[in-house]
Image 1: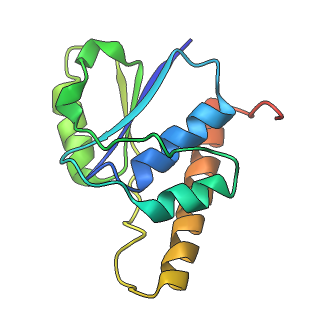
Image 2: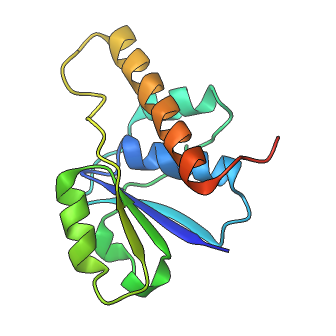
Length: 141
């Protein structure tokens, strides 16, 4: 089976969401990880909105790209232009397919908790739809 790495700026919101959704919906994959260009901090709101859809990300610890060996992944999905450029360089010369799925930072702009939660939920659902479109239908739970 495939191994997948998601990468964004700080491994706090988009990439942990994607990792959690992949683990929930594609449990047969060989390896599913996420990282950032820099190491962020755990984001409680991500745990909350992921739990709403039955994806437990409470054990997620933010990490950086250099934590992983380039040859360990078949598919690498970047959520920011900087992450995409870094991934192309890091995985150059390997068999990894590096994909660019640019997504805005859902935490940017609003400081209102309800608005941020809605923004995080919308991002979670967008990522899930992108994943399903790329990797195929999910198995019913």
